[in-house]
Length: 296
Picture (cartoon, rainbow, N blue to C red):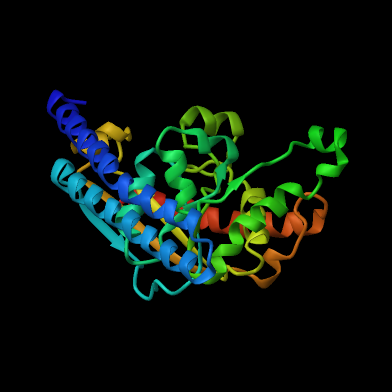
């Protein structure tokens, strides 16, 4: 990474930090109003206002990144998307920049992205409360060992998450889930013995949990394939500074099978195999697409 790329990247990071510090003030104020005005119509209206604040934050971030990076965007498949639809969203995961890429191409095109977060992340300074204010679902998952020791906890994680998602019935959302669960590295790929050339093995359990928690409300999967130029750094600072001259984003809208929200992933082997097969087919197609774009 050259010094000029580092400098531009640092300046962009400073700009995004200042943008966050500025817009988090109205975000907190409207969130405080939601706490003191617990009336359903007011709650829904304020939730929409908070989304507008978040979308404004993303729009300013996108402008900063455009100025600092000079990235040429090649985006395909966004036709027919609607802000009035409920979506499950996934993408291949290579860099922290992936989230900013997704925010760039989806902002004000589909409902604002919501990420399932571990309960502990609510304590992240500034951002934890912002995620809470924006109705990001915080979930508490219990390990198999914990459930064996405390059987009374069985189903508690799903019930907690389902309550957090109940408010999504009142306005459309896009629920984001990286099926791989972690960022791609060649070391992780080799350790997994992944059958894909450019992807890690997808974790179908996360998708099954999300679909069940949403109670059948999600009917469409937005499958984003992100392709960075080969041989370039995929660091966040490099992305900000212009290390990548072009980013390709290909979107496929896929119907979610009706059965996918009804099964018990942990205790039903037949359902588990079925949803794993569905996601594996998507991942094989995605892997072939990435290879074709890199070879073009």
